[in-house]
Image (cartoon, rainbow, N blue to C red; front, side, top):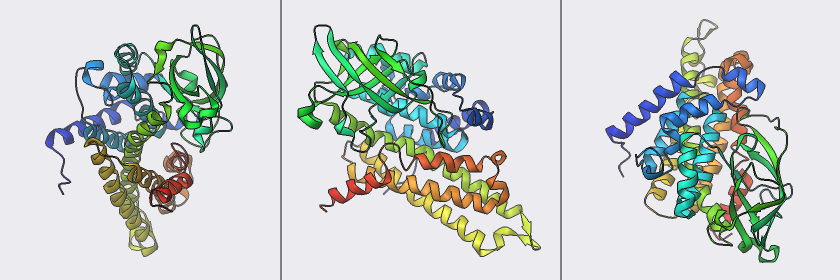
Length: 382
């Protein structure tokens, strides 16, 4: 097996990292404290071309970036950009809003939405979770009733990332609750439409620089031309996008884990206690070795899933394993990085504790760790 990258791929990753260091590495602590989303940084990412990584060049900036390169670029973003909320938000739009339009959208839908989102003119939100439909996602109650103008949308959605700033919402609703998951259908909804109501921004433990709120739809009319794919295709659409999403959202976590490892290693080489550097103590060096082991094993699993997807192969089991393993690795390595730094790691000024708060979300969003275990168990025939 060849694990090497081409010179062009590595050069692109380096350009992404240079851009992130020079343009995005500022005021993260203050924005995290204030739960402030930076539309300016979002636009910088769009201008650089990051939002076009999931979209054919026809609808973005003319460049066709193959998936493995896009995944490597987002790994570089996670390494060089300390704002985990921004990297999460970028990935959320690219892989759960833009990519479904690429795969399932009509030509008119692609021309209408993709260039605007790639340019940063519009922001898209993936709208599926409900008050009584979280892990059991296909039991959702939001109803899309056929009517003369298209569909009449009614229901409530919960914990929607980017909802407070979104212009377009990819909304999942049922056309008939009796059909179960086969009734789930996706719609592209203009957030300025009559009947769309957004709740206040929610405060949360981590990923505080990406805004989140609830959305309610009350007799919101959606034209039939805004249905994404056929009626009843929502389950297939969601399942497909999740496999792609897990690669690139988690690729950013790989980058963050590599950054953590380098910072912790450097600190252990320089911090002195009891007449020697703390890296000479086995309890400290052991933690750092564990961080390295998690990074390398998680990276291999990530690359395997990315390779499977890039070659058109199914990756449901591997993607679930990746989501489970990498999400939990990021949490444990964040804890180890804090422990290596001691009191400094516990302080907000270090930026290290923010990684831990952000990492917890990775065991919850896009399917909790418990759900990933259930998926793998089912696929193993248990």
